[in-house]
Image (cartoon, rainbow, N blue to C red):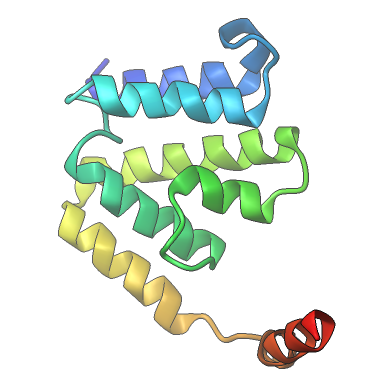
Length: 140
């Protein structure tokens, strides 16, 4: 079993049974565990140079601004811990599999393509454009 397969097995184990690996099994704890792996292991598929690419990839897949780290992006779009942990597992496994066949630059290009091909629904566009106006009215 190669390192990527071991990493995928670890991700799957942690995300399917988070209370076995963390105190309460919350998304924050699971995210902290993977952040620790990211910091501690230069061999991990999510370490070092991969960190920025992972953030870009997750943000593109979730269609959130690039200013978020992967954990913040997942938390932003998921309503509860269980959903967030499931989504984290899906994204980390997808990313690790991509790393087996693609360079970091190719994954960054893929993230850009995902963003470029996304068409914002008209209702979302209207809401996004009117939100600053509504916020200003509330403040005054």
